[in-house]
Length: 317
Image (tube, rainbow, N blue to C red; front, side, top):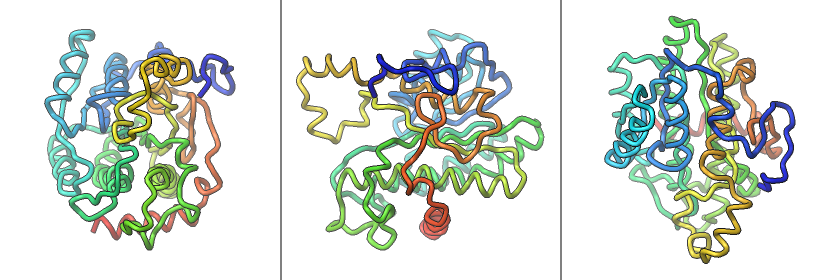
């Protein structure tokens, strides 16, 4: 968090590095990426920087008009950028299936999938599929999306001879989850709902999903990596449901800028894991500040990861 006083370890990057810095001199020409939640915050910056490096980016967004505005802004700064906008509402399995169907029908390749979109701290709500909302958007929608796009990624990897990468944007907030880790038996129980614990649960699920997916891909001998990451604490609109954070006086927000990452720094680890050659042999790991990091013990629980996989498969049927 205290990025002004950070030091570089492992890679040559630190918490103060920006997305442009961690991808300097890396070209992504010929690569196609999907970025969810790309119409604002670190998703928009991830899209801009990937496009700057030559990647064809599909912005998967709930608000298409907002996505088009971001696309236009990117094109004004990078006239050669290849960016498209497609509608995706991760709280709706029908929307996820529609998006995946349309993308797969386009016959575009898919080299990089960045599961970035997220929601933080809403009051108890159920999705249209009757799933607790933070779990539905942060984990299950991405789990289904990844599952539906995986064959296309495998085909692209096989035909292009280029490694595929799946990146789950998690959070160190995964440590705030319920004592049991995942409430498999009480996921949609309002009386058991704790806002921060539910957020932590969904972010733990992002990590376990990547870990189990990495294990399965390695077992298949497929050249696709799956990793998760903590982007840092960033002042974006993901905090819109948190009345405490949104009500902080401006003077304290100014001071917080010395503690919080800005969007350019917040997108760095995502872009690093998605593009950097240093990550090419790494899968099933967790990153923070563009370096390898440690999760909680629950984030390394192999049995819980397998149980979550089966649990999620049953939910998306």
